[in-house]
Length: 156
Ligand SMILES: [Zn+2]
Image (cartoon, rainbow, N blue to C red):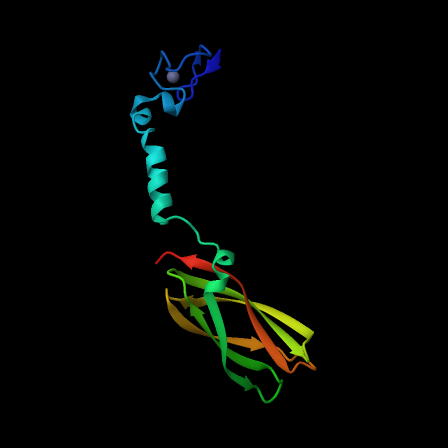
């Protein structure tokens, strides 16, 4: 014996429908739902083929982005740098939430690295967007390399 899923009366283990309350013991035995089950693969195919629900993986599109340095401002007091980069998005998708790394170098040698995320940053498909990174003082560094670590695809 098992208990009915809705009225808790003891019923036979193999019962698909409760004799007391007429409740179906598994949702897929209920004709109200089972008539629609055949639609699931179809809906899955539609969402997959249109890409509506598919998150794009930035790592697959990284070669479709190019970055150029626009401007450097050195703050007078603490030698923090504000470096503005122009990020060109050559994909057909909109991206947001940039996570990036600034690598301070001197004569090709790595001095220090700093990572940050800008949640407000957005770039439209086949478009460009500026990003100003606040780079902490890296003693000895004379050049800075900008690397995108990750982006999220935006649906709208
Ligand atoms: Zn019942």
